[in-house]
Length: 159
Image 1 (cartoon, rainbow, N blue to C red):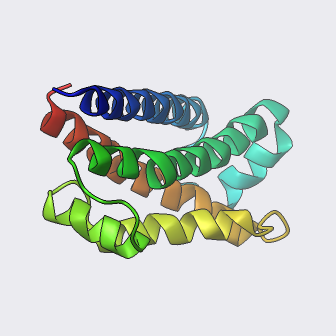
Image 2: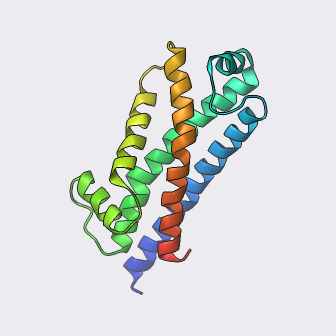
């Protein structure tokens, strides 16, 4: 292995570690919320979450960690993986996603669903409880796909 390959592999490993940190904290926050409120959340459980500073903090952590996880994977991990595989990353992001799909790392349509949710979070959702509930429930559903992507990369690299 050349020096570049070792550097790229180290970058992939570093990005996986960062992704796993966000995923673990996301899962921990959901575990804490699920101790008090069954998933998926409904209007009643969301009202209770809002009434508790601690549970509201867990709710905020869910949203923050999901956003950070999606950012790290989309902005860093995918490109580092392709560099390690010897591919050019100076191309449109859709081409990068299509390469990852050919490698059986991601499903492009599911990635766009994750990205769309991330973009929805970036807008102010706090004034609309129904949207906030939908966001939390969607994160719960989609976090497994993010974990699957990380697992696929780890399997491919035998990490």
